[in-house]
Image (spheres, rainbow, N blue to C red):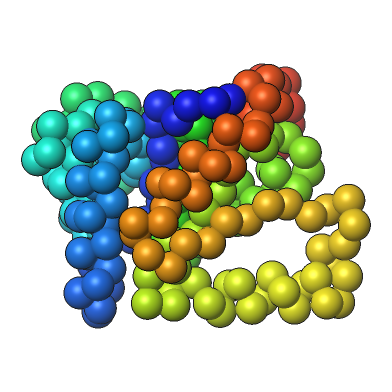
Length: 201
């Protein structure tokens, strides 16, 4: 894999209390659009999800929203996206997000955001894919998670054979260059998950 066509962004359906989070979402949305990279995300129009999606659209970029039917009203599905995919459940949503993306970025968010990125870490840890996974550590938001992962390594719950390459960027400006460097080193076939493997997970 030598080029990033679409990036899946996991992020909160709320804005959080720090204005820097919304600003980071808007800035990264602009970056995606200006670089011709499509956004794949959870399909909502509120919180950080709405901030990044509207920013991509405002700057002429392409947005694919993927949302389960039961969340259409709760997360205020964004109708202005070029492509809005409605799934039957969360499992189908996450699988489609994985299939469409060349890399994953996680902005600040809550339990759902955490669950999504940890699932990608797990799949990578089990050798199911090598697509880059990056934490956008805006104002140190992901420091507790990074500390927990280091704690797991120290206690050898993450040990040799179970390691994975988790990228971290403290500034929005560093996200895309970090991903591009990582993705250039991954062969196309190594990034993809076999359909049969996906069904087992």
